[in-house]
Amino acid sequence: MTAHQQVSMDWLTDPTDEGRAPADLRPEVPHPARMYDYYLGGKDNFPADREAAERVMAISPMVRISALANRAFLQRAVRHLAEQGVGQFLDIGTGIPTVGNTHHVAQQVNPQARVAYLDNDPIVLVHSRALLASASKGTATVVQADLRDPAAILADPHVRGVLDLGQPVALLLFAVLHFIDESDDPYGLVKQLVDALPSGSYLALSHGTGDFVTAEDATKGPAVYRSATAQLTMRTREQVLRFFEGMELAEPGLVTAPLWRPDQPEQPTDATTGIWAAVGRKP
Image 1 (cartoon, rainbow, N blue to C red):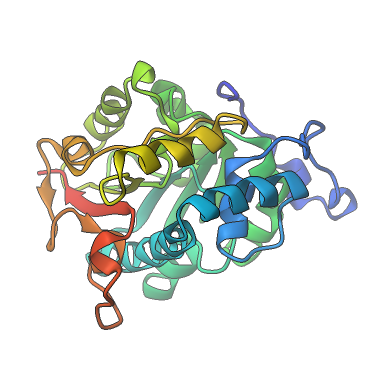
Image 2: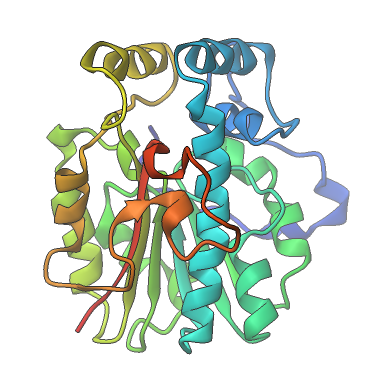
């Protein structure tokens, strides 16, 4: 995992440099962002990613369903927050861009909504030009940063150039905290970020869980990720709820992703989809 590093935006906007990419893409090593892209049906992945993803799906066919449910939750949560009047979004662990990113959804409600995208992996930056192409100038930025260094995120000049951290911000942590080990104090990291935001800010997150599979199967998926560039730590509902301590949960509270304000009728698998989701408001 890469320590905080500011990314020059020149190559994101220079048409003569469109093909430029970070040097070490390591296509032979499974990558969680590319595996997630494969789960979603994307094409930004390599054979090693597809092989690892297929191994995970062989263990639990619900993995792809969970990934799709997580993406749909992101879009519903962002739309809800924008409708609540939130105009600033700090999206950490954005992953490889795909249809319906945060700024797409937020700017449908509020064309002036501003988004700072952060990810710690150079892979994501390869695709940043496409991510920003549909954003109005000055309303979105992409920064290479590490969730495990909140102080650097909060002080980053590109983040502060887009977001006014003195006004309410929606902190988005979708499917990223399960890549933070207990040894890195994920609760402390989230608290540091939330504490830096003013009253009226929000935390929206989703998190993988093994609550709906056997104890043996709950260890098999993370085992596949041991050969990837980031490890996977599944957490229980009670553990995920801890991230919202001191916050007011929006209805319906902490539920599986498909059950958070669904657009479609409930399906039989929705209550046991392996990803918890919630939105909380800082009082």
